[in-house]
Image (cartoon, rainbow, N blue to C red; front, side, top):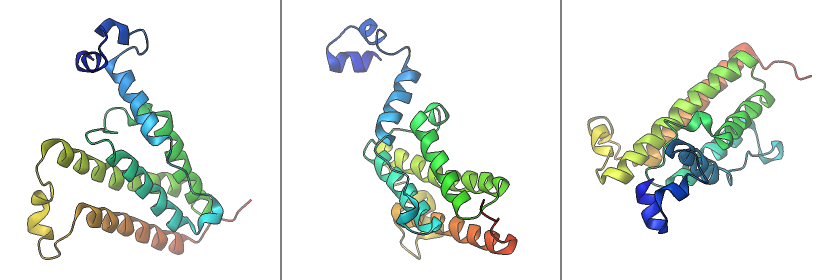
Length: 172
């Protein structure tokens, strides 16, 4: 808060007239960053393409703000909740049961959150995070974007198999 007040040229206590704490400020910033991300409508394609679009758009929005993290305050962000609800809606429209939708949301969140944290570490540390994956990825020479796409595709393809085995639930 002191650093921000210094950048703004105001006393620290002035900030507290607008925001209760550093944590509350973090949530406001997350909401601001995620607000432009749209949940693709049903006419944007099948459920899997819509999920890919939403997850990639959210990652791009976060990438514009290096060091910003969903880890501590993502659950408090109304915009993160809106996007999570959007993912759940897309899955439900795709034929997933409520239980399978919850499982799928968790799996997709894990892949995206993991990549966002890797991106944040790379942006703030100046260290090539890919080095930690080098023993596994060096034969393929994969970038963080390629690793994210692979992880996202692996989860989505697994979800397709799960849906096929159980069959889509009837729409009401």
